[in-house]
Image: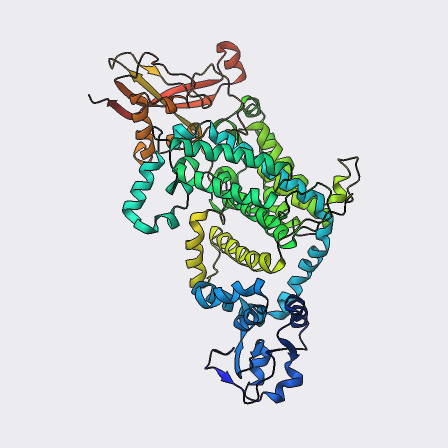
Length: 620
């Protein structure tokens, strides 16, 4: 098939060597031909069609102007992405591109669509490509900050796995709230052999309680190893697989935005990380500009969508800048500072909301500006994350977002924080991913992420059907996501209080460790640890119990006296044995005023709203 989508072309005078014909008058084409020539070195010849077109009159000149054409030694002619992959396949390292083109139909369609989309807009893309060329040159200035990012990500992985380690048995173990074995049986019954592709997890082959514990322990160990610069690429790849497996195993209890953000960040970091066994902090290396750009594009989407979804929701609390009037007391897990922040005057809260919008909607555009603009964007975002961290318990989310800002801070800026010189002190050059691997993968990830971005903003842009199918196929791996926290502000704080009884007369409450319960108990600091059950209880209280089927499983485990589930709570009110009856009551909580706290020593004021779940009795 030729560039115009017509039948195959055959020339009467085939060349002795495969010859790729390109447009000499196109600067964009000349740059890429130079790259391909350096990549293959031997094999095909590269000739401007303007000089040899008369030799191949069978190929229409307008076709030659629209796409590259490869004339084979047998006289057959191919064009477009097919021709490019055929030329690159002369080196074994690029052979997989040709193999994928002939075997994987979605890849065939995607590569041809992308090639012709680029060819039709060469002039515009050439202008867009300029900053990429500058970023490639500027990547030399992000050596140390990239190393710090990779090491920081390893530490965040270790924290995330350690946080899950202490609660995984109660969440997904055999006596947990959502046992992974039961989930896999249900998936296998519904989807059969397609189950592992829809729910990708190592638990298909290893799903005991010991397996869940082992994956968490391995995650902590590998995260620590990555944080000291040992085997960064291999460690990050295994960490991504382990965390994806546990997220799938945990179901709704492992489906938070920071889980998705960690998976996407971790997957992109694999292509930034060197392939060497050891990566010194001041080694001689150049970070992949493609990987750096993708991480910055992730940070842009994360921050811009966080602000955009608030306005697109139409919520009056955001539009009128009154969200912070209730946010500190209605957020999932307040800390002690949240109570004091709630006492701030209303005018100050409105200024804070306005500043937040300026950072979330304005700073992202500085990410792609010159070096001073990137520094300003990074500083603004880190400042916002610090304020959120101080006034609320948002697990490792703030740390992870701040670590992404390291991709904006060049090594010169690090001199302000480190006395030691930032120039490389050794001749060590770590092995990097080759550009022919990172380039195609990066282009595909960028397109898929952009597709998700436009869908989240409901932009009137229609993507080709194969892109939608590819997005659906990759969705189970949770590494191309949309973001946006608190699009609608919760005006009040409903809380669920679970109570048990032996005689249905005297009821004793189950106290959670971190969520509000006893009005006199102060809110606690818990970040970067995430008590996932406490968090999920906040979501459950916002809706009817019938929309939270996992909640009935929780009550069932409590009435059974399951040790792993009871270990997730502050204390067991029935140490002598589980109760016979259990129920859930709904209360409305609000922070006390300064005067109320002085008089009653209470941090919370609460009033009963009614039953959330009726009484459940344990069957004999």
